[in-house]
Length: 85
Image 1 (cartoon, rainbow, N blue to C red):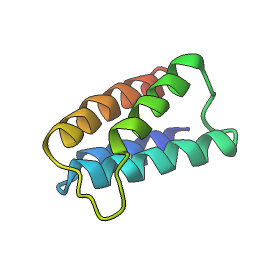
Image 2: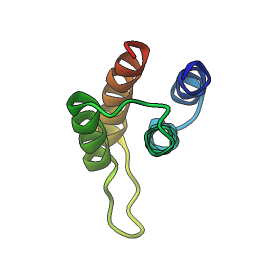
Image 3: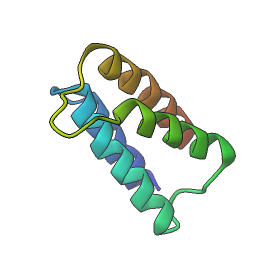
Image 4: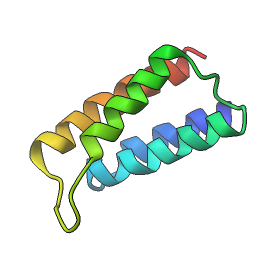
């Protein structure tokens, strides 16, 4: 769990577009859940669902401003939930 937690924080805190970082963080957590490293809780499930909505886009559409801010906010919350495990 410590490795996943560390990787997640590195991904969401690195320079780059918040949406791209959030997508990678989402994949890390989902992988951790499927591997049994991350305990699935209702709060984590809801936060992941919220993040998926923030990252939704139509083909060819770029996500910017509000989506990036939502992704930053939600990934910070997801990081807190992972830290609490």
